[in-house]
Length: 233
Image 1 (cartoon, rainbow, N blue to C red):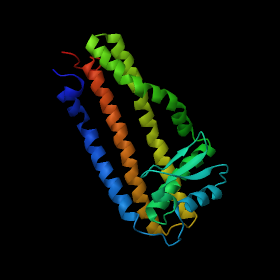
Image 2: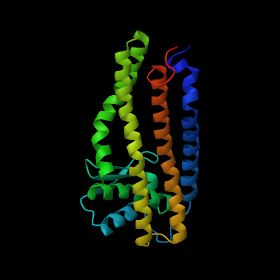
Image 3: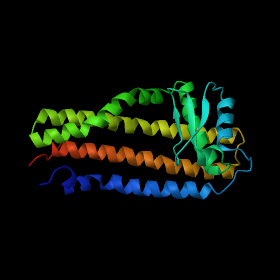
Image 4: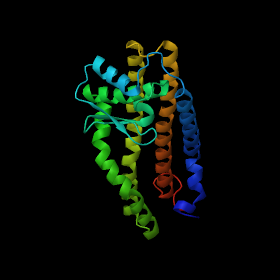
C-alpha cells in the first residue's frame, strides 16, 4: 500500500472531480473567449454594466476597480470593492458584461444581507487556517500512526469542504441576479442575454468541480484513516 502522493487509490477517488475540473476549465476558457469577441448592441463596458446594475438596485458605497490577471474578477465584501480584470473592465463584449454583472450580483447579496454570502465570508479566516495546516497534520498523523492527529487533520480539511459547498449557492444566486438584471435593465437583447448566460453557466462548473474534488478528497482521507469503511488494512 502507498500513502499520500503515491497511493493509486487517491486518484481512483478523485477521478470524477479531476475529469469535471478539466472539462470545466476547457469550457470556461472556450466560452469566455468565444463571447469576448462578440460586442453588445448597448455598447456598455463591463464596468459600466456593473455600475448600472448596482444603481438600479439601490446599492451604494461600492467601488468598482480595475485588477490585474485573467478572470481575476471578484467582489470583496470587507472593502466593499468590486474588482474587474482588464479583459472585463473596459470591454464591451457579452463575456465582459456577464462576468461584471455576476460580480455586481455579489455586491447585491452583500447589500441585501444574503445569508449564504455572510456565512461564506465568516468562514474565510477558518478556511485559510485549515487549508494551511490540514495536510501537515494529516500526513504527520499517518506517518506517526497517531489516530488523534489524523482526526484533527480530517476536521481541519472538512472546513474547506464546507466552504466549497457553501460557495455553490452563493455563485449560482449571483449569476441568477445578473441574468435578471441584464434583462430588466435592457443592457442586452434576449439573445445576447442567453449568450452571456452561457459564460456564467460555464464558470459555475468550475465551482462545482472544486466542491466535488474537495468532497472526494475528504472521503479518501476518511477511508484511508479507517473512519469510513475500509481504512488502513
